[in-house]
Amino acid sequence: MRPEDLTLTTSKQAARKRIRVKHGPTQRQNRRFIVGATILVFVSLWYVKLDFSMFVANIDKTYGIIGRLLNPNWTLALPYLTSFIDTLAIAFVALLTALLFALPIAYLTASNTAPFPKLARVLLVLFSLIRAVPITIWGLVGAASIGFGSQAGVLGLFLPTISYLAKILAQRIEEAGYDIIEAMSSSGTPWIVMVFRGLTQELMPQLIATVALRFELTTSETISLGMVGIAGIGYTLNMSIGTYNFENASMGILIIFMGMWITEYTTRRMVSWIRKER
Image (cartoon, rainbow, N blue to C red; front, side, top):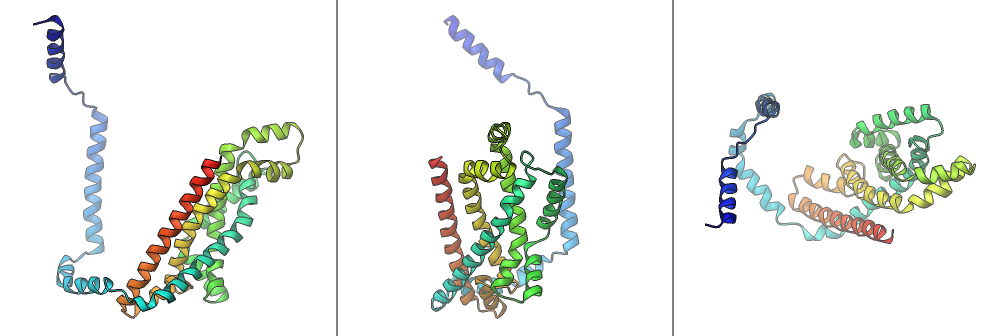
């Protein structure tokens, strides 16, 4: 046997006999996590009082509903499509209106552009509270203020959309704005000019990409608001489900799926194009 072969064989044998080193604290942490998760699962099952016999007893009804959902009522394609266009319009108006307020707020709260740090902290806390409230609550507040309809949808989306956009845009400003701010500050440029003519032009591709992605989420939220009676395709779908017209509801679900897929595809392509242009 050649010396090279002997060395290779010895190395393989040593690798087989290699002792695996176990990290005690990590293993204890894993065991605690598994035990805690198992206890939490059983406590949750006991708390919600799941009755699996009820699922088994009603399995035939479930099959019947699925069968009806697989048979959409194609005569309602145009009405549902019209409702989805209404949903897109509500989302677009809410997003555009919120953007007009969110952009200045983002500059007021970003750490590298905030002229008043105390005001920035107050705004950050305020918008954190707004984001903590579910979108359906804001929709009901809008409906209680001006009645059900498209305007209530725009009003319900207004504050949550501002809080989200302000947070994301402030992060974009903090990530990419230090060099421009330092250069313009050293030349004595006023804050308003520095922000809206310097930073905004430089960050415009990122801002457009952020708004495009947010439009997809706003459209989804508008559908959710429709489920509580605001407006749009969610309202039409809720009426079908409430009257157990699952064939009609299936058509609405299909329109929502196709519409959201097209919306997502369009926004992704737009973002990719913007990034390539940069």
